[in-house]
Amino acid sequence: MIEPSTQLRERLHALPEIALPDTLWQRVEAGRKRKIRRRKLGGGVAALMLAVAMAAPLLAPILTGTHSMRSEQGIVQHDVDAELRALDQALQAAYDRGASDAEIAPMWVTRDALLAGIRPDSPAFRHDRI
Image 1 (spheres, helix red, strand yellow):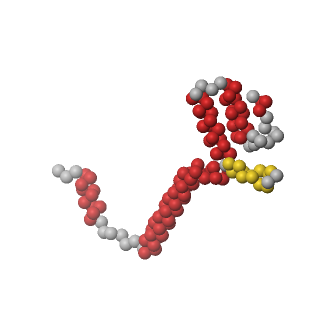
Image 2 (cartoon, helix red, strand yellow):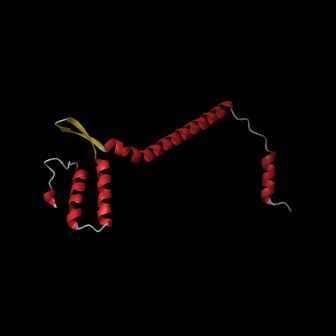
Image 3 (tube, helix red, strand yellow):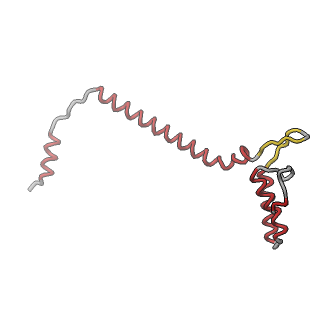
């Protein structure tokens, strides 16, 4: 006995092929090319966004870490990140050796002032805020 699905399959294979218009294949090909271009563009945008995301932490200190201030000598370049790193290392060393609060507190005040954009040698900076 032949299964119904087998009979149906044989009937479908026996049907003649339908001739398709040439314009259909042109539209199919044009659509396929559009999809390929869109995928390539999407991949390029994704790769660019990934590169920007990976480069942002490396470029952030260069773009934001240096700001200029006026003094008697002219424009002084001040690298806040370098001072913060040095201050953080000094704080860590002080904690490691068991320094007193009286020794550590001024370093924290200086660090907070640097983060707020206040220079330690400016009139706005005061050590009595401890």
